[in-house]
Amino acid sequence: MKTLKDLGDLSGKKVLVRCDFNVPLDGTTITDDGRIRAALPTLRELLKDNAKVIIMAHLGRPKGKVVPELSLAPVAKRLGELLGVNVTLAHDTCGEDAKAKTDAMKPGEVVLLENVRFNPEETSKDPAVRAPYAKKLSALADVFVSDGFGVVHRAQGSDYDVAKDLPSAAGLLIEKEVRNLSRATENPERPFTVVLGGSKVSDKLGVIENLLDKADRLVIGGGMVFTFLKAKGYEVGHSLLEEDMIDTVKGYMETAKKNGVELVLPTDIVAADKFAADSPAVTVDADKIPADKMGLDIGPKSQKLFHDKIVDSKTVVWNGPMGVFEFPRFAAGTKAVAQGLVDATKNGAFTIVGGGDSASAVRNLGFKDDEFSHISTGGGASLQFLEGKELPGLSVLE
Ligand code: AMP
Image (cartoon, rainbow, N blue to C red; front, side, top):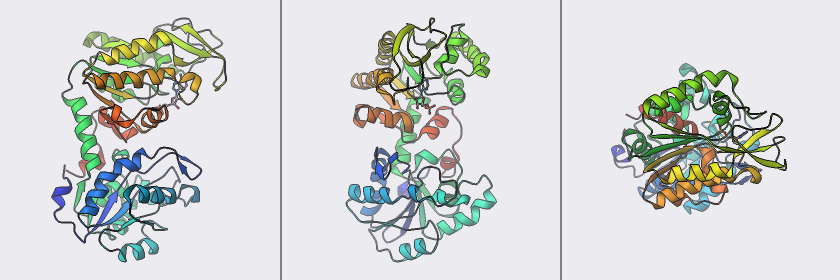
């Protein structure tokens, strides 16, 4: 993979940079600026080199239309504060304003182009539709730096096609993501524990399949665990369940046994009447979930079990919450797992929090980035990496 140094002297050059600024917003307030902070090393490096920095990014899912609420204006403001330089927002992505503002740039200046997903071509599956649009983006600059790790699992205009048009390289964030994720998947120090949660088994099939012959231990929680409990023949009430995945999950259980992978499931569950923050909660054994209740978190015994399994590891990868952590009453399982990773890190283990939502979850639960070895900025991208699949936005930088 080509890196910044392969681009040579960038002084005075227009450098188009793809960043992942898809931050959570409450109105116009950014509730977690982790993704903006993660982009700073590359941007600072380019500014130090006296480049003209032109940034492309997306926010939310405007589906190819201009949606004023999804303007990057709050990002431009926050980025300016963090970088300590003025960040000019162009009011389009590759139209007249983008052209005028980037033409007027001086070395050391920063222009942020408006949300690339306001353009329907950006995410088109048809390369012939994306190509002319990507050419307009490429025409704004001399070279391209890909640093939006959160999007490299998709071939899109601003991460894939521009890389074909311009001399290109990975930025420092992508370099770091690839180095850390490879460390966990290629030659992990053992025991290697993978913790998976989140809502659906079907989203994590590829990861489970790939890691069933790499990990020593697979710890499962979250909404997806009820399909595992059902596969064991337990009553799961009206917890989240993917009926059509039960046989697949049974297959995983057999493969785990055959491969000597320890499959760790919760032994108790915090269950409630309904999916609501104030729904009264009871703790029940995992094989005794009442038929009229739903499991919304792992129970206290499981929290300790999961924590201890994590601490007894040299490499830990975690993706997906253990329960409905958005409701404080059902956040303890996710907190216990996060604490497990923190304690493992203190013991010298290499720990990765994978995925945008898990990353926001740990920050919102009060944990600090430096308490983990690595917090990945990419949800889908880190999962696809863990699946061992090719990521088009990375291959194009080879
Ligand atoms: P994902 O996007 O697949 O990583 O899933 C994240 C979501 O899973 C979060 O919004 C959680 O609230 C949700 N979740 C976790 N555990 C449960 C559960 N037991 N029941 C329902 N939803 C859950």
